[in-house]
Length: 64
Image (tube, rainbow, N blue to C red; front, top):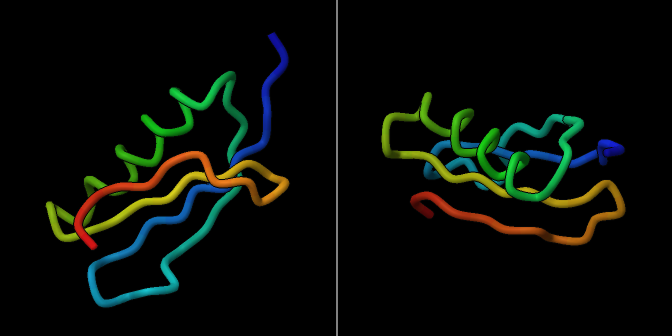
């Protein structure tokens, strides 16, 4: 399988811009799992967003 590039953005509630990084993942599901793992550092007060390199949104979640 060929990996795809995703952009994962995470942030703390109140930080609307967040912190973005690129990651290679096999599928949407693994990119989402990575975003949730990154968001765990905010201890329940964070949010996450995953999009493809083209800018197409995949999913978002967490506290907003």
